[in-house]
Structures are given as structure tokens and as C-alpha cells.
Amino acid sequence: MSMADPSIIAGTGAALVRGAFSEALTRRGLAVPSALAQVLGRLRIRTATQLVSYALSFPSALQEALGWSQQEVERAGRHLAKTLKLSPQDLDEFTEPGGVDVDGYLGRTAGELNSDDKRAPSE
Image (tube, rainbow, N blue to C red; front, side, top):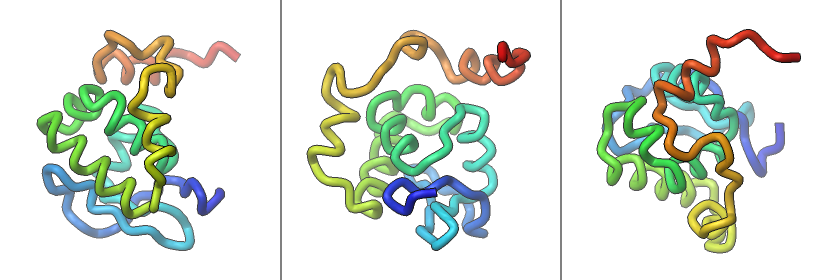
């Protein structure tokens, strides 16, 4: 695990509140409430920067999975980006066209992405 991109781990003990990931940056990684860790695991979001990327680039995937509004997801993503001290250039990678490889994600709901987890591995 690189602290430049901490792994997501369950266990802040905090309740998940709409519009906030309730995260805590620790030596072990980015600790989030267990309920959020479960959702992120189903979406295959494993690191802090992946979570920022989803929140800012694909808010509808998290919106559906969490039952939040798009604005709440984006607010939580921006707050996490500040916590991680991501630069504006880092954020541009998530929000500008061509900055994120979206093949296989566009037009898919969180439910469709979750169903991928139930498929047998092809390896």
C-alpha cells in the first residue's frame, strides 16, 4: 500500500452520513464506515484516489449504491480530495474528458456493476 494512494479499509466506527464518507486517514489506509466499505468493495473501489475518481467522474454509480444525491456524492468526493491533498492537476485527471478510462462503465448502473462481482472469474 502506498500512502500516496491509501487502500480503503473498514473501521472508522463512525456512522455513514449523507454527503460525507466519514473517512479517517491512518497508517494502515483510509478507514471508512463498514457500510461504505461494503459498497465500495462491491464496486471494486479499492483505493482512496479510486473513490475520489468515482465520486467526481461517475457520481451516479455511487449515488445509486448509497442512495445519495449527485451533489452529496460530489461534495464527499471533493472533501476527500482535500483530505488527500490532491492537486488541481490530479483532479483534472478525474473530471476532464479522456482523463479516466471509462470503457465498460458508461451507461451502466451500480446494480449492473455489482452483478459483475457475481460472475465467475475468467482467469
